[in-house]
Amino acid sequence: MKHTFKDSVGYLLGLCIFVLGIPSLMWLVSGRPCPYVPESAVRIIVAALLAITGLALSIWSIVYMKKVGKGNPFDAYGHEVAPRTKELMTEGPYRICRNPMLLGVYFYDIGWLIYLWAWWPLAVFLVQAVLLTVQVHSEEKRLEKDFGEAYLSYKQRTGRYLPFPLCRPSSFRCNGRS
Image 1 (cartoon, one colour):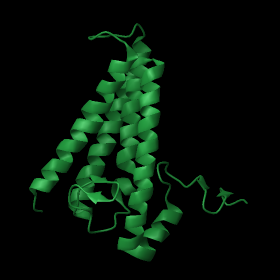
Image 2: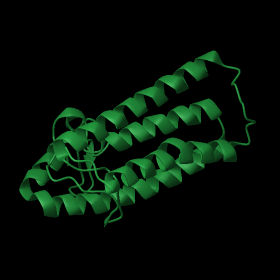
Image 3: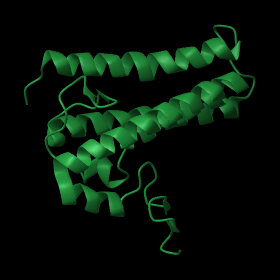
Image 4: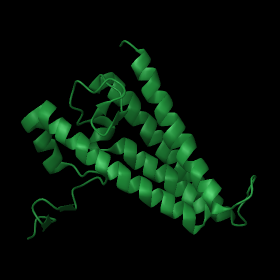
């Protein structure tokens, strides 16, 4: 498994944006002092558990992507920032959902939201979610081109972020019902 400069750039960008940047922006807009310790121990525990679970899921997804998919996760709006996957991944964390790395990012960020407990960080999270959803749509088109029917079949049986496809907007069907 060869590691390239492009791989390093992708991992560094992911770390700077998703692990450090977004939470820092949430903190900044929350108006909370630094350091800040919430008065609720339960809030701290729930926030920490969500953040740790999210990081673990994202890291597992990245490692799996490198080993099995033979690529890197950082592909931004159709521009290859780091080497793209060469193999379709449908097992490991990708058996849970099509975007386990982003699901992990969302868990991590929700942990921060609970920790900070303020409205402006929620706005940051929602903007990020919209931007990432646009990115995912772009990526799905590329995956359909790269992997064809195998990806379309995987897409039909696996939810985008949740462990099962709840609703498929393209067919306007929810849980098998029209």
